[in-house]
Image (cartoon, rainbow, N blue to C red):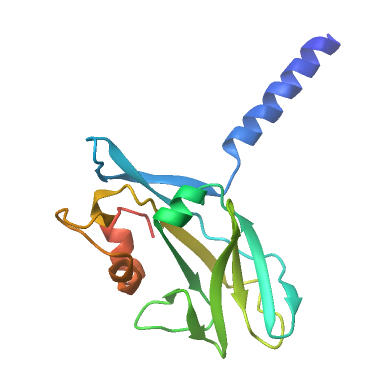
Amino acid sequence: MKARFKMLFLSAAISALMFAGCQKDGPAGPPGVDGQDATVYYSNWFYPSAWAGVSGDWYFAASAPDLTQDIVENGVVLAYCWLAGDVYEGSSVRPLPAYAVGANWSFLIHQYGSIEFTSDMFAPPLTTGNKFRFIAIPGNIPALKSGTPGYRSARELRSMSYKEICRLYNIPE
């Protein structure tokens, strides 16, 4: 009986770990070089539970297993924020880096598999009402390869609005 209970508990724990996480694979992207679909990765919205740091240098880190060395070095990583009380061109979603609500907001990838969102506010930023997310576009997607139809450079992607990026890669907003 004890062995059966342990096995049931172990199975439940493994199942929970497999289904937990903050990342989703995006929908199938444009056909890849070899005819395979290319995947664009995007996170759920991150809601900071606490900010670390000091006045003028606040941050919170989030697990981002899709930010592999290959994607970071050869693809494009875009990050966005929605800040409480902010209104920006009819949409409250801002591309990062940005200046809003009296502070600079940005992101950095301090190690593969993790992302940090930053702010230079004097007081710690709010933990409620603010949310952050990233979209990772691998470098093997034909739309990033020059000379292919529909080519978009990293610069062009960074200048597109959040809604345009979501539409381009079929990402739920």
